Image (cartoon, rainbow, N blue to C red; front, top):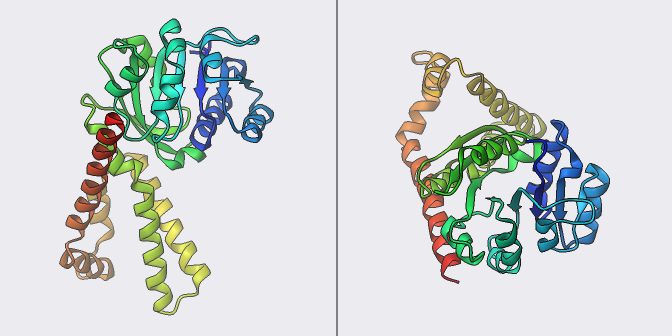
Length: 283
């Protein structure tokens, strides 16, 4: 993988996380080419990571004075502008025929291929999440029919630089489920931490203690899950003594149909992701 040139179209937070993750794992920064129209952000990336800056998306793909043509092109722009960006670099994509990785939420591979006017373009559609900013991301990945085993291996290695957990799905519509689970998931945990802290404060605990205890409880519980020895259901049962304090809390959750609340939340985010793909695809 170290010999592959990666062209980043967009240099915002998620791209910065991926670049930082790659460099921290020993990837040659001179194999990373970035087109970022915000000059201040572009210069920050160059200063922090010693990457190569391109004057345009097309130049990032076809090569600069310092870099050869890209083996991999990574789209890291807002879904609202991806059509404009993709059509703008379509000629460069056609010339180079790289592996394309898209982290644009809701954008379907068939639409990206169409905008690039390249029907047999190899595309990996990716849904990361914001903990990637700390190299603690969870990522879902879907390869279209033109991605070969070597390209799939490269995509896995690249995305592992900012994800602790990466999973391939075999149907593109499942990326929308990944969006509903882990893509939007950090917000669910932040909301729960807010609610737990507020509850403790109402019961008399100082805000600093309530916030800190709620946050560390979520972090520590997640660490126990990631250790992998036992699943969530087993760990929950182990911490729940019959008729104890945890049992009382879980009974309250059950009474309010907590599982159904979670299902509806994930379902709503999944359906919205599907709607976004349809809307952006029709533009």
